[in-house]
Length: 64
Image 1 (cartoon, rainbow, N blue to C red):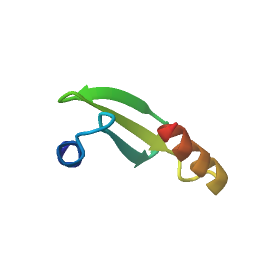
Image 2 (cartoon, rainbow, N blue to C red; image 1 turned 180 degrees about the vertical axis):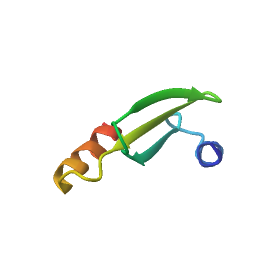
Image 3 (cartoon, one colour; image 1 turned 90 degrees about the horizontal axis):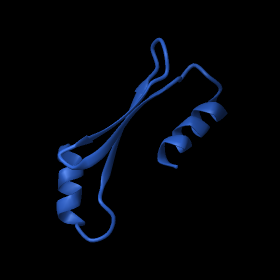
């Protein structure tokens, strides 16, 4: 939250800032979307055991 709050304070013009947390998948992929202190925060599990192209696509899906 410190990163998001500080970024918003430094760059207040424009769209509201968001946060993304990426974690390696242990058992199952997961998707969590929530709002903290008025900021949208996403948490995603990425399976790092899959082919690199799929990892790349999964990561692009997070920011799309």
